[in-house]
Length: 138
Image (cartoon, rainbow, N blue to C red; front, side):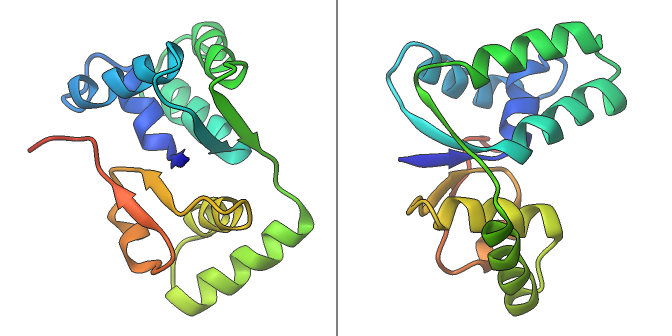
């Protein structure tokens, strides 16, 4: 099983972005059950925030679309505990990574998920995670 980063959801839901054509097919594969993924709970809020506040989408439309992903039987939602946060501190201090990326990585790793779909190269320095970038030559 692989994880999914917020940027993939943002690109997949925003057809104005050039990354849309690379990321939307992945979300469609998940929707039809061709792939089962794990998504950290923080990713949903990160995606919502970017789509509503950066890209100015309607909050109600974004909420509806993200809830559809959240409630998919093909998505395992990973909840964040205090243990996850403590693990994220360790990742952040060891690899000098940002807080949200460290939290996502900790959440995946504590659930034995070692691959993530992401366009964010920050995951490349976390040795325990393999980043898979669905964005093609952009």
